[in-house]
Length: 251
Image (cartoon, rainbow, N blue to C red):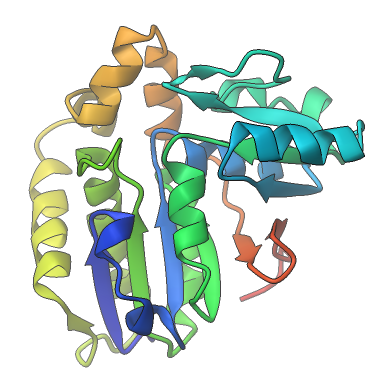
């Protein structure tokens, strides 16, 4: 069981010292983390996260078999193969392929987590798989929310609360897990929201949800709200710079 659970509502709120020796969970529900998990669920070989569009183009140019995926301002980047919509990452397109991936918020949050002992990708799409993985480990957990353009987003905070609920639910003895004040807050908020209205409806009311609706990506909100639709574990290896799929039987 984790000894403690921290929630950071923005990447810039994460003290480097806190990450060391623990597990960081990068969360960008709408949509980077949902999209990465979908890619792996549909057979992608690996994902290479990049901070800039220029870096992504250089990596793809060095190996034209790689697919370019991502967005700026929520929309597909000119000349890229795929956007940041999880529906783009169909098995027929991504199976056995390497994807060079850059987004406005998610890849930045992921790279911010690099000092942790382990970095995993979280979304509603894999929440139970992820929670069971974390329950089996004694490391402190830091849930790092990507936010949107430096602003806190409700969808990531809701997921953090949901993940905490699942960790407590699956753990046999969680009495000694220490929750920070922020962890307690998002946990309480999730417990309230999850019993009052459907998740997709709640996500539509968040900052990220409103942004996607304005861009006519409402179907991505429904996709992201489909709990456990992609029950895979994706881990970021800072040394290689790759996001890789864990083995299906890895507990």
